[in-house]
Length: 425
Image (cartoon, rainbow, N blue to C red; front, side, top):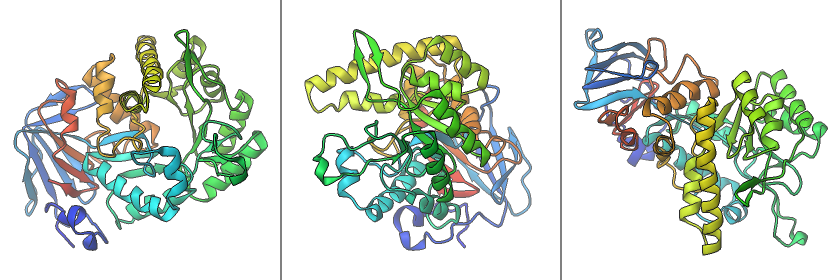
């Protein structure tokens, strides 16, 4: 067994030694110039964290140094909890999204997903929510399980399997020769009965939560968001009830009204993208504690990488609407979590999302609370991740500078520990 205090070059350069990554058998003390207290929005100087196995024993300006403990001095850096991305697609990569899901086999895409998971972990993301394999079925179950069993490196994962969509909906294969019967990138369910059946199947195959596409295709007309809904509030309520029966929750892709209202009325756990939220939707989200997950980075990426001038105009119009609506949502007190929609843009670069949320209206402290405290709640790991506290899992990263002053330092992660194992140093 490799000592956890050693930089696991095996993880980065020597895949043959990936099998069985384990925490150190001796205590570890992390020391740095600063430590982030997320809950109170303050920096502690200096900062230390005592780790035993995969758990934090103590954290603060000074901790006990047990005999035989390994001390890792990270110098002029800030210790903080591992980042959380609540909206990722491990099975996607940059390129033509509609073609890669057709041309690449599920085994090939699963291999790519393991590499994406590694890249996200190395960027400091120690927990993620995978929002659909986009046509790879329940292959994400194998990726999650391999990470959980310490066979490959990657973040802690909550997975949704293939996600759910209506015939002709947002993730259907539209624009292809119908005689070729090109499959959709999500599983069909066209009414409440079919939703219940598909939900049972996806949970059977390993899904931790259910992801449903509720709106699309999207457009901006006369400065207004236009997007058809896919399921009624009653249909979504049936999905939420069936999922809750099995102790799980529903997240939706929903960009605008009336789909966002349908989702809020049904009681989903998060409304992802949330480009437009009406007054009643906002009221319900605040009342029920439903998180908005803005995913700015994917909208920025699409606007900057459009395939034509006309497409660029459409993408920029959507992005402009989104940023204005976000400021209204902040002013109204909508609960926020952080998710990037990484996959169509390169894995390991999604800390950009925190920068954009600050750029468009949040303070660094608020964004970090949204990412770490709200993200832990959203992923169902509250009390286990998101803070450096005794009893929490030892998911710790280090960044240069002070993230409460410059949120951009989260894009420069130089140390990564997950579950007491050092992956980057």
